[in-house]
Image 1 (cartoon, rainbow, N blue to C red):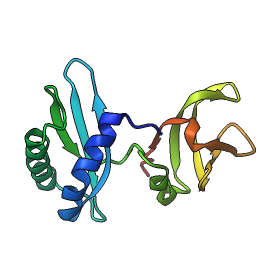
Image 2: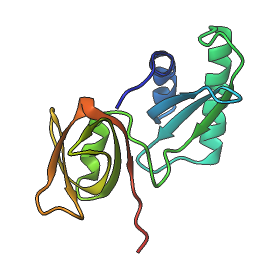
Image 3: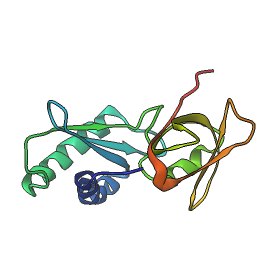
Length: 155
């Protein structure tokens, strides 16, 4: 799960402020499409409200501008990670053992780059994923994972 250098820089800069508000920084994404955007995902044990997102946006937006952390025009978005949350760090996944996840790899494994399955285990080396179409689970190392996200299943 790779994170660009600007996203890392923004994460390190905003995390203390977000934590001082009683929230957790879930992750930061920086997109460079038509209009560059910095997307900050926040969370807490009780979820987050729109008011909390607005407060973080105001405080963090001002800090980013004053300190000139980003040297070009951008749009700032603050959001909860949502039901189908993207994982930014391996340690975020351990709370979701037993849940279905979607993974995209940097390099092919067993002739594939995309996997969907049940997260069975995580450790310091990687994760164990039980695929629907295979008997045995597969081991995927952290450095092979490009993107990973939770798949929410409605019941």
